[in-house]
Length: 262
Image 1 (cartoon, one colour):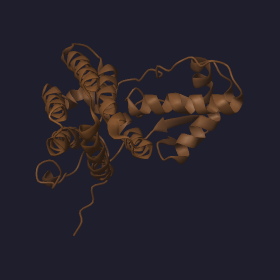
Image 2 (image 1 turned 120 degrees about the vertical axis):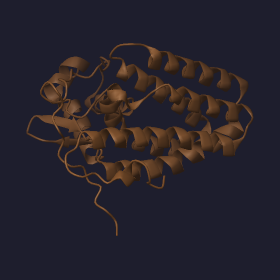
Image 3 (image 1 turned 90 degrees about the vertical axis):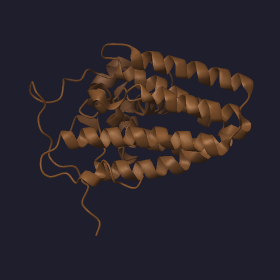
């Protein structure tokens, strides 16, 4: 019988719960017609969600985003509604949208999709990668490792560097449709990653997984590249599930953390 993996009520963190969140860092947009601006706002918010710079609990209001991005209310409202229709944002009151945090069952579903989609992309990349691509991917992983080692509240930078590394590889897959589908999964998981990276969700193992991917790409070994990617994604998912479980009340089934068949 399938067990219920939906999230249970969270314990409040010491000091009154989750930390206060600042407004997201978003670009100021160039002028244009409202249809073009709506797409630009949508793209900017997508990028912020995928890179983890927008976290659950961060209010996204038409007024605040209009001020930050230097555009009128109409394109912002249209972009927020589109992201709500995508299932990425939810409206909790009349004035604000919020990124959704994934529960453990949703995390499992997204992981399954990512393993299939990103596994295919990295396999295709292994057959298409060239020397210049490898140099760029290696530099991006160096930037990621540097951000991971740095002290301080640099979670958004770590996630941005991780996003850049992965998509530099996936861009080599030769399939815009596959790439776009992968992006939809990152849209869903990005905000949840932000919550946990500053709580010990990532550590020094992750650059090694990336290095294994680079080595496999260099050898044009599609099987090894996919295996390294699986290690990376599964390790991250397990850490997030462990941190989610530590914040909940009630009896969390231990197989979620240790015995789940990933």
